Image (cartoon, rainbow, N blue to C red; front, side, top):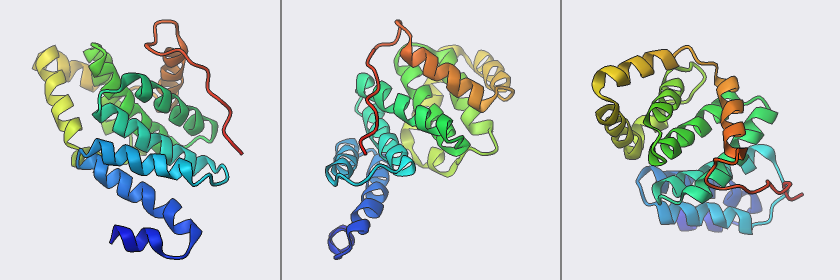
Length: 192
């Protein structure tokens, strides 16, 4: 099916099908294949469209999180958050904060990770179907609960329900640009 979908003589098909196959691979924890699909999108050298760029960066971030490539995850997360905030796309911002939660957990910040994950689960504009389909999220949540103790985890989880999505995303972008961030690079302007 992949071959047929990618080889139909329509240039737009690859741009629409590659993200689908990439996300499916990522949710099945085939992270190298996920990364490859999203890198293929970049090779298409299509015109810059913010939504497609956001999707590509999300896919690359998903793969980087799964592969424990935290510098790449930081870079892609920052781009997704910047695009989501610029265009006021709460659903994309919520997806990005999911990756921020994983990065925080892998960086030894369990309370921050729990806050971000809880915000994503609580926010009404956050797409939740993919969260229950990605095994890494379930494992991460269980690890966070064990690390913080169930009581502390519940307190943080409940407190996070009151957080503002866009304000938290802006704070996350500021943290990604801070000197304490594990990767300090400047975003290149999107290619036209």
